[in-house]
Amino acid sequence: MPYLQFTHDKHDHNPFCYECWSSIKRYTGRACSTCGLPIPSAVTCLCGGHLRKNPPFSRILCYGIYEGGLKELIHLLKCKGIIRIVKPLDYLLLELCPKIMTSLYLVPLHPKKLMEREFNH
Image (tube, rainbow, N blue to C red; front, side, top):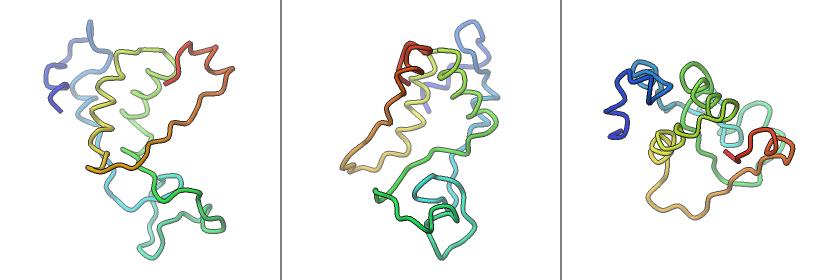
């Protein structure tokens, strides 16, 4: 990630230190195609909660497990409004994009949350 190479512990410009950035890893294991949660089974592509009802789409992409550094980073953007995190997050998400993408759907923010946060993440 070229953008992250110059972020070494410059807290005056970056709310996340280099070690925290380095701790964010892409999840590459088996995951539910509906919710993105890890699944232990090699027989299905759905978690237990989604086996009963098929999803209305064919695939969902998820960068990593919502915990640790990734959870904190997302929290800083969504709840603290630290907008400068958007560009580094973009670089993480670009790693997921297949060469040929047919469509991308954004989940709209509820109007009440939009008023609270003042931007749609």
